[in-house]
Length: 132
Image (cartoon, rainbow, N blue to C red; front, side, top):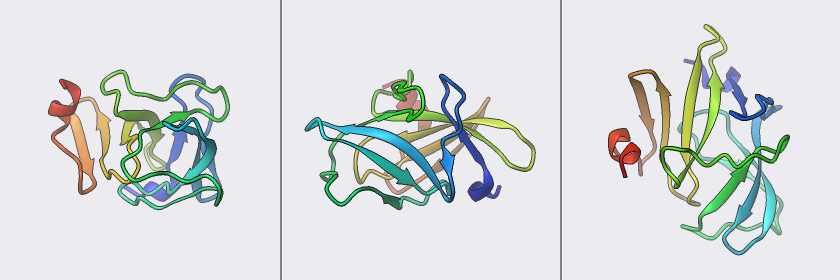
């Protein structure tokens, strides 16, 4: 699966979150600082860009919002993860993509029905995540 060409969408408004080579989110830190974050569209790659004055503290919880409709993207299944839709470029299949809201924590899950792919050094079993 070539993740770079996938489409990423808000689960609430179905707005497209991809811009160029990034997926864009509006965010707010625990310290109430707001900023845009541009993340890599490659699942399992944890590089991101932000304004130099918008700093994330290691381990800080970050709220992710849709930059289009301002919907809170916190997952219904885990308050520590955000969820967006990922539509695969080749087969146009829609997946749920969960990623950690904690700065520096590398855990991502791509879920479709009973198929779960896990990415990142900090990922745990998705069933544990779901039932926490």
